[in-house]
Image (tube, rainbow, N blue to C red; front, side, top):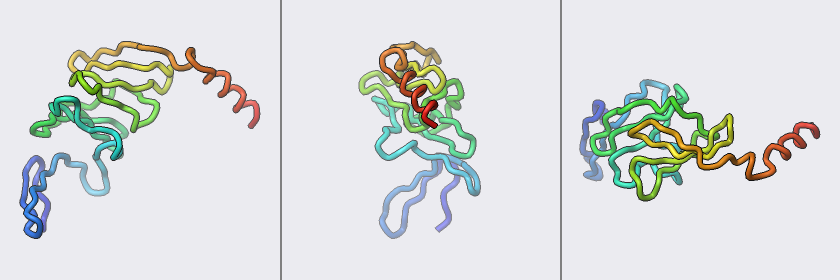
Length: 136
C-alpha cells in the first residue's frame, strides 16, 4: 500500500485505522517525536514538537492539522530529548541549556526565554566536571 501524501490520510485496509502523514523527511531521513516517554503534544494539544534527526533541529507543528509552524532553532537543549511541555500552560515548555546549564522556561508564542535557575550554581556540577577532567 503506498503511503499518503503530506498531510493526507488513508485507511489501512487490514485494520481499518486511519494513517496520516504529518512530515515529509525524504528518503533516508527521519522526523519523529523525541522519545516515547516525552510528550509530543502540549497541554491542550494545539502544538506538537518533533525532532528532525537529519538536520538536528526540533520542529513545531500545529497539533490539530499538523501543519509546520517553524523550526525551534533558537534553543539548544542539553539533550535532544529533554524538552518538557508544561502540564497546564499550552504556550510553555522547559529545557536545560546545553551551554549555560540554565533551566529555561520558553514561551512558544513570544519566543521568549526566562531563566528559572542555573543548575551549575545549584549543584557541584562544575566541580564534578573539573574533577572528572583531571582524572582522565
